[in-house]
Length: 288
Image 1 (spheres, one colour):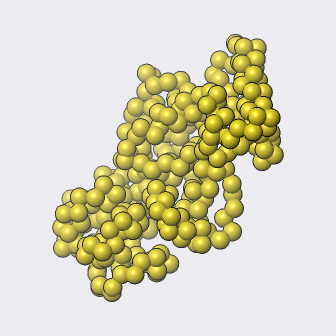
Image 2 (cartoon, helix red, strand yellow):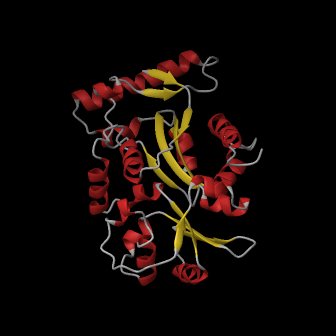
């Protein structure tokens, strides 16, 4: 067994297929992204659309299309106006894939970049809209920016923390699966990995004894008793390492920081969320 510290990185990838493939592979802890387009196309074919939520497009649109989008009342499509009356929307492909015959959705499909528009069989419908880059988003009024700007993080923490994180909505998640990840295999070093407890030095012998016992029993279940990982996982503790992808807009992250960086938040949650908040301030995503 081994202990590691919690950590995080931002996933900055502007390629739809590569980013969605990277996020989806996190569930199985593999890094094979050789043919990301084929892989993501298969995901869509299987109906695994949760992974598609991790890539978002932002557009400036005219008032007519804005009114149509408002009428959709779809939680995966964000629509807002700035103080000058300019209209904006942000969305992932999920609502488009789920409602591709809707006349308003068809208009959104037709403003997509060509590399993803080919996923649909929509009829041509000319619509006036401008795709917004990150630089464009930074120039918007902050309340609009906070709604339209999405950030994807890869967080390594424990399952106690991830159980709390996934309660936040609206956000999208892709978590390391203890159903499919067999920690008795070589790719995981034939061992269990734990997030080091904050009070480890004080209770080192107790933690080592308990976690080693769990590891031995897990290995016995999977190797000798031939139990599947999805059954053997029942003995894994909250401190087992978990890698989770989270995608949310800045507005939602501000709510997350308000709750999870507070003094009343669990110490394990504060240990990872305070550095993430500092990173967002450093990157200029939020104000200090």
